[in-house]
Image (cartoon, rainbow over all chains, first blue to last red):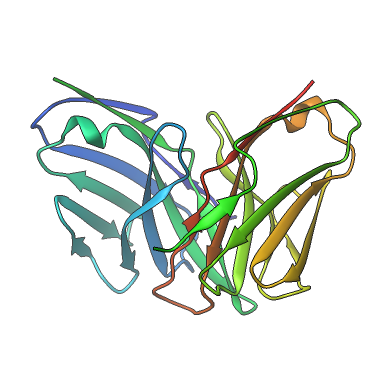
Amino acid sequence: GESVGLHLPTLSVQEGDNSIINCAYSNSASDYFIWYKQESGKGPQFIIDIRSNMDKRQGQRVTVLLNKTVKHLSLQIAATQPGDSAVYFCAEILFSGGYNKLIFGAGTRLAVHP
Amino acid sequence: DVKVTQSSRYLVKRTGEKVFLECVQDMDHENMFWYRQDPGLGLRLIYFSYDVKMKEKGDIPEGYSVSREKKERFSLILESASTNQTSMYLCASSPRGRLGTEAFFGQGTRLTVV
C-alpha cells in the first residue's frame, strides 16, 4: 500500500542543538520526497526535496538523507533555533497517470527550548 | 511571489448546509489539490485536478465534490456539511511534471460544522 509515517510525534530540543526528524515510507515506486514545515496558523512550506537517485542533499542548515534500502528519510536541522519550532511533514510523490500525487505522513512537532 | 489563496481563514457552518471552499493560485499551475488536516492523521488528499474540468478522487472523497472551471481556481464543495467534516482544509497547487515539482500551499481554512 501507500503510506508515509513518522517515528516520533514530538521532538524537544535545546536551542543550538542539532535536530533529527525521521520518516518511513512504504512505496518503493516513489521517486521524489519533500520535507515541509508548518508553523501555527499557516499552510505547509517547502523546506527541501530529494530525488530517489540521491542519498543526501544539503540546504541552508538542513540536510535530508534518504536510505532506500530501509525506506527511511530524515531531516537534520543544524543549530536549531526557536524559529524552527513547527510541525514537520515528509511527503512522497508518486507519478501516476500523468500527475503527481503527494502522500503525507502524520507529522512531527519540533519544540525548541531556550 | 507565488501565491495560493484560500477565500476564508475561518468558517462556521450548520449541519446540512452546502459549503463552498474556494482556492485561487496565480502561478499558472496545472495541478491543484484539496487536503484536510486532522491531528495525528496528517494531510489526507480529498480530491485533485490536473487540468481544467478534470478531477480525480483522492483518499477520502466521500461527502465532497470539486469544481475546476478555470485553471487558477479549484473549489471544494461539501454537499451537506456534517460535524465529522470539521477540520482544517488546505489547498495546494503544483506544476505538471515528473520530477522537481513541489506543491505550494494556501494558508488553510478552518471549518467548524455545528
